[in-house]
Amino acid sequence: MKLWGGRFERAPSELFERFSESLSFDRRLLEADIRGSQAWARALERAGILTVAERETLVRALEEIAAEARQPGFFDGAADEDVHTLVIRKLREKAGELAGKMHTGRSRNEQVSLDTRLWLRQEIGHHQNRLAALMGSLLALARRYPDAILPGFTHLRRAQAVLWPHYLLAYFEMFFRDWQRLAAARRAAGAMPLGSGALAGSGLPIDRAQIARELGFDELTRNSMDAASDRDFALDFLHAACLAMLHLSRLAEDWILYSSEEFGWLELADEVTSGSSLMPQKKNPDALELVRGKCGRVLGSYVSLVATLKGLPMTYNRDMQEDKERLFDASDTLGACLEMTRAVADSARLNPERTAEAARQSWVVATDLAEALARSGVPFERAHTLVGRLVLESLRSGRRPADWTPEALAAFAPEFAPEMARLLRPEEGLKTREIPGGTGPAAVAAALDEAARRLRELGT
Image (cartoon, rainbow, N blue to C red):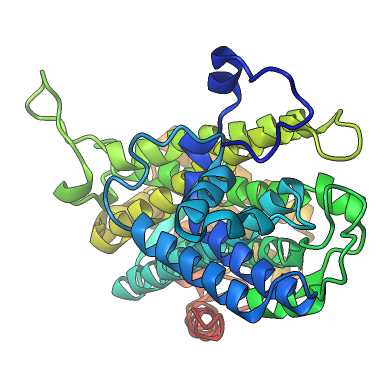
């Protein structure tokens, strides 16, 4: 059964039908399609197109279809063009010719926009919940090792000492912004398009505002042509998903490195790692590697849809069917990666002795010492040079920071006061960084509490 055909003398070829069908992937819009169709039936009743009894029959039949769709085998043998055609065919089986009234004043152009928006808003809510759960896991992991010190890096070189919770809070901030971007994407999908028709608006007195209220939309689309051609809301989601995946990929890269034998900072649980088919000793970070790899997959979906939309004329074009698989795959991938990363975080164990030793054996204290000189009145350029020379001499002589006594430090250069030697211990330098947003112990403790409060306020 087609929703069109009167103008044609011959049926479409089997090749074209195979090429153009979308039921194989847009079937996941079925629940949204039924919700939208029920709302449309009520709108047709208000517009005088359906009687009360006809509306009740259609709404009840649609509810039966939704229940049947939850059972195995519902789609077996279905050869419909798309999910909208399938629903109408099933509706005709239950309601007879009355089903033919369902498309009065309604186009598939607005219908598919509605279905996609309904589905996407629900999906985004699930992703926000997953992000909040991951952020909670990071805070829990931070609190398990509140005093652990590790080197922070620039250019993948040891730079300055930071607290482990401070490091994890950096990712918390990334994921918090991702949550906010998803919220913005959900709002972007919150305009209700029904009543726009194919492109010119419905010719029936449809109460669009009532439909929006019934379906939980925030507002109405403001222009019927834009409503038919708009997929910005899909791009907004893909953009948010790309950034979330980018952040997951960066975290995965860090932890792949930190759990390697060369670092030995982090132990990944057996449940999220795998072995080698040849090398018995291996414990590979496959879960994190897959998260890192799948980032490119979501980016590909984003770029694909941008490229599809970039040259389309007004208004609807069949090219836009290509948005579904990109959206579905990106959403599935993001959800799986959020859940996997949370499982890794929940089971990871830090080796604080190894991270502290990495900080102690390197010159992550150099900036602390230079700033101490600056606080004592030494111009920072001179302070920078003095500490640089101290580092160079240490490297030549094989000294670590802790090898310098107060007396030896003062003897190296008169600008060094003996009490500055305490800053050669990373834990002392941390105490100078109590500025908001810094890695000082008090600042980090306050930031942890603040992050927990903000997480609670998300209300997920």
